[in-house]
Image 1: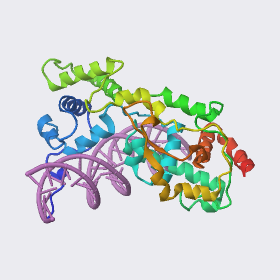
Image 2 (image 1 turned 30 degrees about the vertical axis):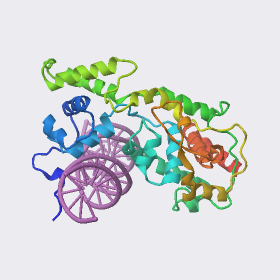
Image 3 (image 1 turned 120 degrees about the horizontal axis):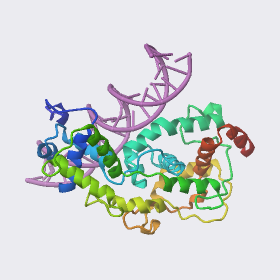
Image 4 (image 1 turned 90 degrees about the vertical axis):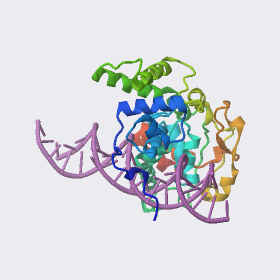
Length: 310
DNA sequence: AATGGCTTCAACCGCAACCCT
DNA sequence: TAGGGTTGCGGTTGAAGCCAT
């Protein structure tokens, strides 16, 4: 007979978390650090199972989480990594340290899958039902501009978008807390766990630089540096025509072995992102990324562009 | 204004991998 | 080394919000 699921216990609360629960959880983790989730419900009095606490923390409350719209840069990375790794959302999320695997998975399922399908339909209506990463065997194209090419409007837009919108989870919690305080009687800030949490949150949200809620986590440092992290070492030379064979080769499992962790990839010691050792300006998915970008900015024109390319 | 369909995303579930004794 | 406990992961669900009619 197997062990009963942790969430089957009577009295365990399910469903959306309340601001009060969030505050209690954040406060506890602030004090004890994440981990030992089994003891969290017992020690905090939360009527949640340990798993629910862990998920709430990792997917929502953890510092350094970027919420809101995905930039076209991030979209490109997700598409690219999904093609390489498949639905390994945790692995993909490791390349986008500000995003959770859940967020990426949701974004893929709700946005990118559709976009790619549309892209394939645009390329060839017969392909709509085939795999998301294959291209017609006759397909070739020229992608002369790289991510780092400052003359490339798409690249510039990507970087601008990447650096513009950011709201840390700490800020989110702080905002959420404000709303909650407005709608609730003012608690005694001195003695209660909640009061302590508010103090903590206010401190952390008002400190501009090193507001690390979690002491084993440098995510706030990442906030300022991760923008630079996915700056593939691209060379400015134009790349050649990329054939279908190249494309398939890129996606083959053998190429996964080319992915290596490279400290120099990123100038921050807080994030050592993975990197492909092959030249990224030869990667055909840039074409898809470009198309996605174009699709977002000039919906009506993509058919013309695509037909001119092919 | 009402309502029904669609979309989004936080949260749940179950399984697998890992850890510890 | 086996077995139980814990954590991580990916797929799925369902409530809430949005939008068209």
